[in-house]
Image (cartoon, rainbow, N blue to C red; front, side, top):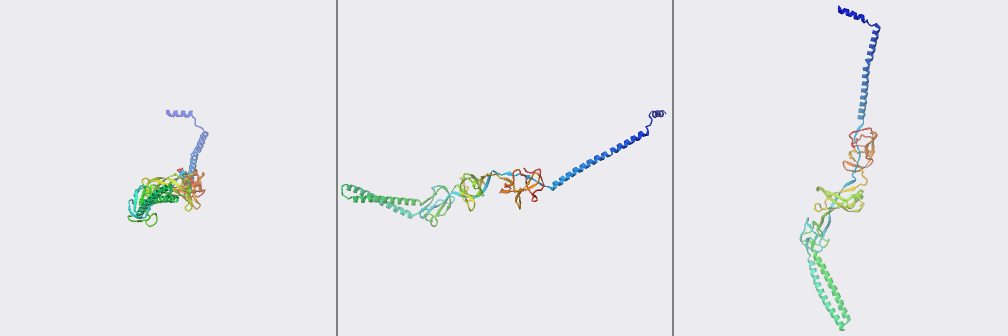
Length: 402
């Protein structure tokens, strides 16, 4: 009962609001809800449109990237300032000579066979020359005879000189004896010279080595008939080669002839001696271009103290040739060989392809010299496909070569 009284008192103290204020609050509430409900929808729509726009841009970029050819680029590098050229050559003995007999006769014996190393003055063979021996004996007898006649002429001339003092003989007889003395003296000198000649001929019965070397050929045997000089059958007895230094004659192409100078260092290798290099030096050139081959004949001397280098072997001679202009070098894979000739694909600042003609130099296998058409700053497509055309838009890979 007490609670009912308190309630009625409160109601009497706080009268109920009017109907107009209640309606105003309802309208404000409805307006607030009208404003609050579209805001999230607008925000969601904004973010949806933005996401679609970003996705479209990414899709367009991806489509454009797929439409463009992706290429890797590189830059031409400088070649070596010194060019190395390899040319074939044939080794030859520094000195090589056939050995002949100087007298006719028969081979008595020989002392050196092929492969024998000999020194200058070593005895190679002996020849029996009975004709020379007999002629020498006769010449010596003639010399003895002329010497006896000369001695008699001296005595007779001296006697007549004494007799002329006493007028026992005429001046004519004195002059005749003096003339006879002069004639006998000349005969003695001629006989002496003849003996000396035949002694030298007899000395040729022994055949000696003309210089230090090795016997590369022996063309005689015991009992062979020998003809003096280089006439007749069996004229050559031995062939001696000096191989302490080897000569190599090389035909250098005309384009390198100006760079080959006397004294230039070279190296040489042979197929039969793999892994071994032999140093040499340009000794002389012919100073003339062969009109038939358009080459310069060059002689290279290679020391051969060990004797490993043999005359007649095929050799590769390596020359170091200085270059006045150092060309650019590109990989062979970057060259396009088309109907227009050799070209390279250059990527310009706008990532467009420019096909540029080039002039090729020497081909080293993996790389090739570029004489004209490319500069070191040009971005060259590393492995251009045949589908590349001038003006094509491309995409440069991020890991392109420098």
